[in-house]
Image (cartoon, rainbow, N blue to C red):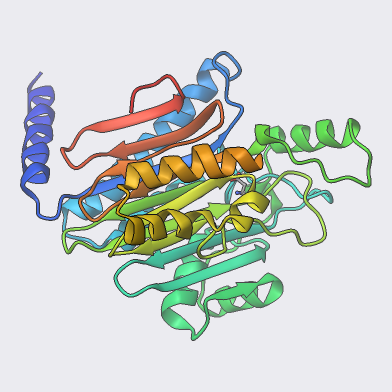
Length: 332
Ligand code: ASP
């Protein structure tokens, strides 16, 4: 009883602290968008997903409340989601046509437009850590394949074997895809979007965003989607917004989705909500591109539009309220 009261008091104190914070603290995370219909997930899987999203957003928020940077907050949140087997990133990532795992990740600092990314990297437990080191510890923005892995090895990042990454769920998924398709065609289905990402604003008013993925199931030829591409899957600029995307990456690349949202905010006077909604529900929808974004602006306003049946998402808003959602009929 006492501990419940204490938790309630701490919660109230955090809400008050948040409400008066200038700029307000806010963080959002996603675990992918796609055909996520009610009843399609077992109740255990749905609960595990909601728990992981909440754990990630709370971990990032705790860093912001303690005065940590938005970069630290989005990295910590994404690492938790990379380690959670429910999502298509790190552990539990989708499999390539050869049954392997090739990971992509990127991160961006809205304070100075520094950015880092890795693509097509194998065996790296937390690709977001490598993306961050590319940003802070190399003169480059993006490293790929074996080069990215050797950069990560030189920086003592943790590697893991297939046992860590490959889940039965992903094995069965790959078998099912390959059983029903022409081997010459790489099937891309919205069922399988579950990339992870985070956006945040910290006490200094700095925005950051991070995205991590296994890409698309059954991918081949070294296919890379939008997630590690700055401007497509990830973008952050203190003057407009921070965005992390999920969805059919080819469309997000062609429409430079993350940057387009920030550019609309910067140049057209649209609010973040208007800009994000226009790009996801008009531009992308008309093009046939499915997916969604999470985004935050310099006032700590969060937007999480998607044009699919669902998007795994969670946020702690500037007033301190927690939101966790999957389906489109859950209130934002
Ligand atoms: N956007 C990712 C990609 O195309 C997939 C996803 O969001 O699940 O690689």
